[in-house]
Image 1: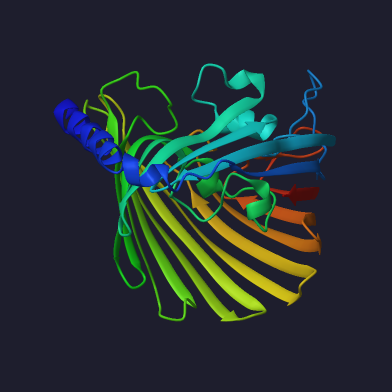
Image 2 (image 1 turned 45 degrees about the vertical axis):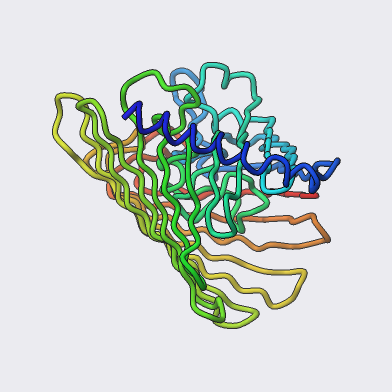
Length: 355
């Protein structure tokens, strides 16, 4: 395995050297700087507390919005992209609680600062590009940066799937609307490898000629050691008209711990997007999440959640007043008096800005 990785890295370096003279004439002196900020207030209507300790029950098991009756900074991001001929570099930094949770697997994550992405790419040809470094995951429908999502709160599939990968990948154009990505990476979400388990990555994407229907088939799988993880993920995007579109995400992840037997969790979600005008849109997300075998850290049950998120757009500013209802098979949420219950209701007022 080490020989294969070393050979891939050597090929990347040789390719960059071979074209260095051609690239130097095309170097741009200035990087492109972009960024975003998101803030929110979250209130779970149970407003529950532990009767003994007084500790708040947030009634939240998903990423990035684990607070109650509090104004919060989600994340401030700065991204720089620079191209020099066939080569390019990207660094993407995040600050805030969202960045801290994103970097949970790294030892310095408690600083509220994260290197979300940092990678170098080289386009060997117009249909073959190599990338090495850390990049956001290809798996799932939702994205880390809040301004790129129409719902502010995250779904369960995003929260318990991968966030990022650090390794080497190849993007291959197959002609017309189809593309293939193949890669090898450290253990998912880890910047530095601390065991013998590497992950294979893959994505096949395609679309119709008019781009009104597109599909992404995603994969990650570990190899090396007795631990095993395999995940298959499907994303479908359909544009019905310029005012209505539908998204779908389905995923299943199987995990085999050291010395244990294999178990799976899975989820499925639909996104209905309506945009009556350029300044107002609304998204309804319905998700079913099944973790009955307690494969991941979420409650060992099944949960259905439905989220309604109006989007009020004022230039690059988007205001999102959101309502979310969740219902579980078992009593995993809490009432006002601290007693367990099967359902809960939450409101969020969020705002995002990008430049």
